[in-house]
Amino acid sequence: MAEPVHILIAGGHGQVGQALAHAAWPDHVRLHRPTRTDLDLTNEAELAGAFARTPFAAVINAAAFTAVDAAETRQDDAFLANAEVPARLAEATRRAGIPLVHLSTDCVFDGALDRPYAEDDATAPISVYGASKLAGEQAVLSGNTRAAVVRTAWVVSARGRNFVRTILDAAASRSDLPVVADVIGSPTSADDLAAVLVTLTLAMVADPTAPTGVYHYVNAGETSWAGLAEETLRRAGSRTTIVPIPAAERAAPARRPANSRLSCERLARDYGVTMRDWRIAVADIVAELQLQKVAP
Image 1: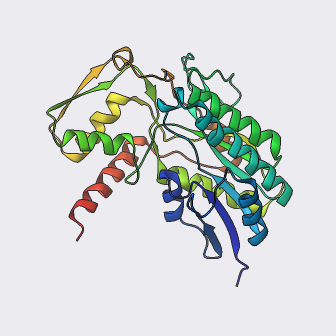
Image 2: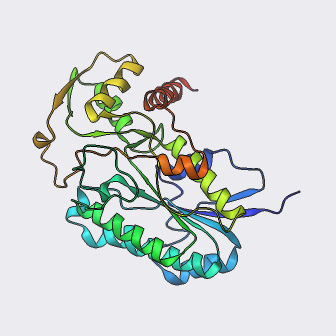
């Protein structure tokens, strides 16, 4: 019987953390998903104590301050969670001699390109959230040479707060919904993203020479927020109408990239990862939500 492999998941109770808990891990893997009460990632002594108690083989960092608009006025909170915590995790994993897989975002780009962003395209965040996540990337990559940063975008699932669930909830009491139509990206299933994180983590645990650096992962294809909303409602059989609007009408505190598309070629090359079409992923999410409604 294989020796247990202990993996710490920071942010293990968020949307991606829950997906990681439901992912297909080998039987000998033991996941540790402490709550904020169990482990304060901002407390260096608590973090050191966790590493002293458990021989972790890897850390996946899915913890983040993700309130994009709130970050504009809560800059200290955003940088603490998105930059300082990753820096501490990078240092802790470096000292332990283990890999760190860190989750990041399309918001490190300004969205000005007319094609999907590659990993080595110039970063230029246009929000506090994006700037804090970029600082986190830099801290991770400079703090541990055995680190992989995985940028993703538009993460949705049947768990946690996300766009698909918000649209379905709103459609239950509305005949029409205004949704931004001039921002383009690739929706990403949290379950599909979790499967990719499993692949990278296990490969990096097994092979100290496994590829590292920055990777992109999103589901295949592209659409607008309005397109994602329409597909969600179509799959749900809803009669609510989506009314396309420009992003300028949304008047949100934080700017978003108009182009959130990410190229995943590097991940496919280094790890053989394939991308499932976003429509199929959304269909599965809607079906799961509908099953939850009828479950006893």
